[in-house]
Image 1 (cartoon, rainbow, N blue to C red):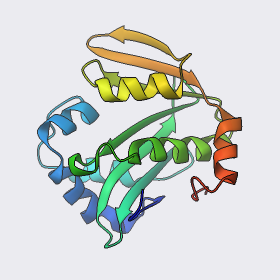
Image 2: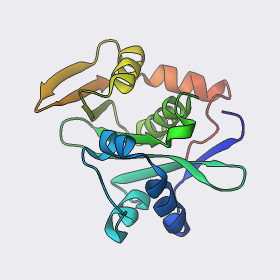
Image 3: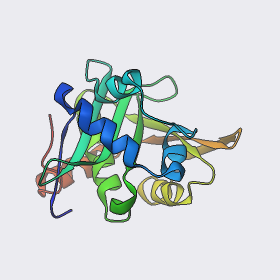
Image 4: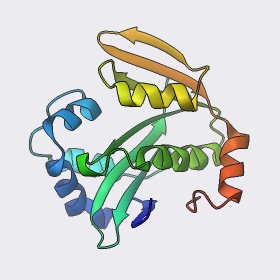
Length: 171
């Protein structure tokens, strides 16, 4: 996406993440967090920028440094890696979500992940369509209004995209 950069989240992103979360519509917050998160608390903000041996976090920023999307992955229980992505309302529909998913999965794949999992609210039709496009063979289980998704990571496709210059971020 022209005018944006994907990079790892950093500790100094705390205030930018807080502003990003506060700027999400109640609907978008609910789709991402499964609840109408109010003012973002310090613990949530820290969790979203935490990067360690079990967790990864990426942000998409504009040229002026504003965070317009966030993605995170963590070692999962139902899959090698579980992911969550949210894009601010005004930047939705421009391809940032799929770019963040590709970047997260490439990074996870380098660390050995072979399967990906996520929980999606059943009403989040846009993401469910994206999942069907990215992983047509994904296993989907409906449970309490959400859809538990498990899919195989297409490592050949991820690495081919990396070589094509599609996603410049690797580690």
